[in-house]
Length: 312
Image 1 (tube, rainbow, N blue to C red):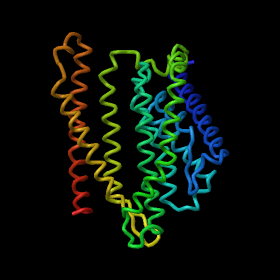
Image 2: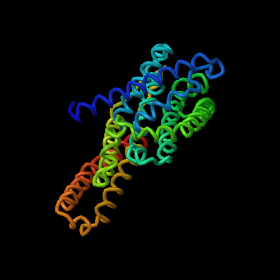
Image 3: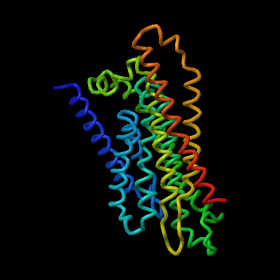
Image 4: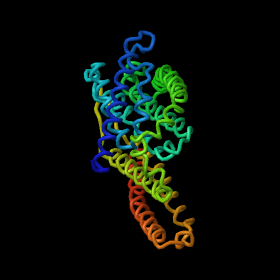
């Protein structure tokens, strides 16, 4: 069997197993009454295998697995009757946030325990953000008669309600993950993990990891900026626009710009000149950072334009 075919098979097998485990854990949580919240949501360990999909296989597999789990969860809950905002925010976007775990894949294969802690933390923060927005959108008409989207009652209600199950979920998920992390690290000597994580054991590839992350950030920023211009949803006599995504886009793109400029300024050309191949890597990375800057500047400009049009 060719190495590329074996690598792809391992990816599908591992993602399938972890996704199936997330389905099982999600179903178990639905069978325990005190794990469920009265208006949807509940304590669940399903995000543990979803986060490990990202840590083992990367952001794309984390995104797809999270999306599929969200779809499964939506069908089980019958959430299609709750309207588009809930489907989008509570299911698709919230669980697709597992992609963020993939940014720490390199450190996970280097057996850094903090990679699990940080990835789970970011995953739960993104989940809270989307569930919070859903709570404000869905329950605002019943809490505040003025129709103000982010009224104080709506914000407090959504914050308290979602923290009520997401905080215990995070604490339990983190404790369980820390309990099983050492046995998982011992599996790295297995042929499957050796194949999946081979490039992260090669120090020559360390220089490309930051560039890949920056491209992901630029992509997220670009998508957020586009949606902030074009995405509007009408719900219960209210028009909801996603102009706030322009602020997120501006923050991400500014961070990516600072990183690209920093890496260009501090790249040590003399170190790369020790070998011809490494010098070529230096030149390639230099061009990548320049292209990043060229991509980021119009995104920042358009994000500022969107903010001005919607808030000024």
